[in-house]
Image (cartoon, rainbow, N blue to C red):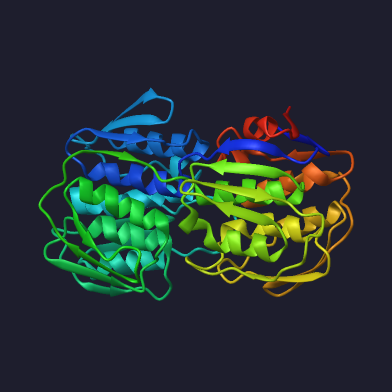
Length: 416
């Protein structure tokens, strides 16, 4: 098994380019099943999750070609299979997103319950509620879920929670449903806007994305498109925190600054300098890092995917900070690992109370999930000695060329 060795590093300096967003690429790859002509996707990050999703598409009968670094050509004209293999579904939760496209394109879909990071229950009941509202029959049996419909008909669907995955899956199912569908209390994440922009390029009629009410007028069929994936706001946030934690000076390129407003605000609150330009952001760390409180919320609130990285930062800030996790109930698994490195953290329900310490110590630690792994890399950059991080396959699921990007900024990080 691969591991990262992270040595205490000098302040990070230089420029780093952010890759396309994993959480945008995966639903867009799933949505490519809806097209009957060639689709070209650009700036697709080269990640394990993307690889798995491409295998899912191939297993369903789509032709998938890797043309160049970050460029994928897909043709789904002749998809003929509606059943997703268990061994692929078990690797990645996002593979559940093929249900909506298959249901509306073939009238049926069958899949096993999804896998992914163990950060909470993340129920799929909202996805199924949406499919039922559009007229599908749902059949759950021995770990498999089937959805069937002679035809889908638009309806008004209210989501009890603004779930990103459910919003995406229902939107993809509704694009070829008869009539009008409205999703109320829809998620507003930039990745949903990106998915809708891609679908509209293919001929869909979707309005209101980026607000809590999305309106979809069904069309008969979708064609092809060329589309570039938006930059990954979580990767951008991770490198911004890396600049802050090492008291460095880093320019993060290929970002949409409006997508990372909460991260910018909290870094400024902690005493860092943050300079925004059109497509880049510069973060200059401070010797006098102040403790700040954080509460994770659905977009446009503070992202749950940045909570672990900020916890690493706050573990060496002056004062006491409180981090409240409202999105996933099991997203403090990195706490025990950070405590092994000398962080002073107490958990009380969904809150973590941190007392900043002067320094962290290296220790053997484990990446319990994707963002936890990123937090441990950040902690390792400032910990005395060499930190050994195992289970880094989690990190590889969401960060393209992580160690190379860190190394070019002066970090001492090695894959072994």
